[in-house]
Length: 333
Image (cartoon, rainbow, N blue to C red; front, side):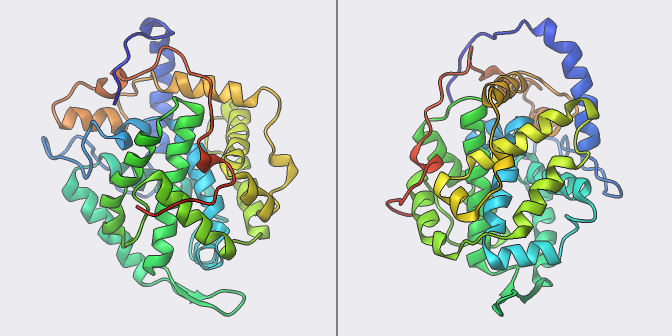
């Protein structure tokens, strides 16, 4: 991780915004009916990944997490077995916000939670997957714990979160992107994935191999509408939420966008990319003391703002790596 001194905005100007967003963040991280998870405990216990990892750096940013998460789900829903399992055995349609909250909390626990508690949570998810299975509309049987499907889900999540951070927050090098894929191998194995990419080139190879299995579906359009209109953010931020959904569509490789026939209304509008990059850059400077990144640093005896010492003075011009465009790939691992 590169340490870059300085900040485009004085810290004092950010404090009121940090306080407001900290309250919003607490609400989003606490799904109704779910037990409260304390990221400060057990004191001193390490997470699955170290605090100087690329993953700890990118998962602290709420803008890129939302964009990357939506992009990942688009790719997941393009695969028929994953799509059928998600749509028939989850609450996306009935409780979109609750599902987003639970998914977000699970991601936070996976990256920042104490190892023993993260392993316990993941084991519970695996038990739930063991009970999920069925048949796709074209007659193909599937099980949610199929390692082949889990490989795809894990890889698309890493692609989405990492590329969203690189595009809308701070550009990552190819080596840093590859490191993020390698880091994802640790939790991925616990979830049941067995052959996930461990590098950027590995992702490109997997994507090329998966393309014949991907197909358009009205469910993808329905998903995009749901996450655009769900009350995931306060009303004043709802236009930004819709912009983030369009940004997620833009993150999907262009040839896959065309293959899926993603609706034109989800094309990014003039000025939106620059707006989101400014929002993402600002969000990377906001220390939200009640949220998992800061709380987990305190658990490890680090200052709450430890992760925020690694911020750029300004967002550089973005040059998409090959994985953001149409790619054919050159190797797994």
